[in-house]
Length: 174
Image (cartoon, rainbow, N blue to C red):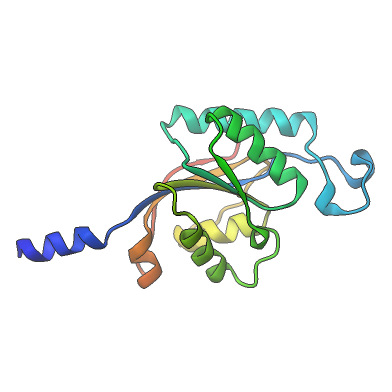
């Protein structure tokens, strides 16, 4: 029996995950851009991203990396978050803007996350809602700008058997 417990522990990989929606963005007109992907954060969006980062920090969360959609507003949010957490690396993941499927995206995120055991993924709705609902089933999530869900999950177990779900630590929606 001791051997079984030890074996189970060896298969665990506990990961602290934060899924965050980018901060409030200006319209295309206000940003002076032609494409939605180029929209920038509003001053309120910058402030809310900072406030959310401070809230995460108060929960003793420390990201090893930040993974961002390539859209400007998400990258700007990632830069603000990175500043608050002493500059963890920001990685751009195009699938956070336009995934082929949510289950494929979650596998990419867990495989991409290889530096330590915690990361923040910054993207858009409905993608952030769907990712969170995949890990925390039987609950609907609707992220406000700069809102986040902080979760813990045994990623190895989850990827092998999606019946094992994560634990929600904090849903912060300002």
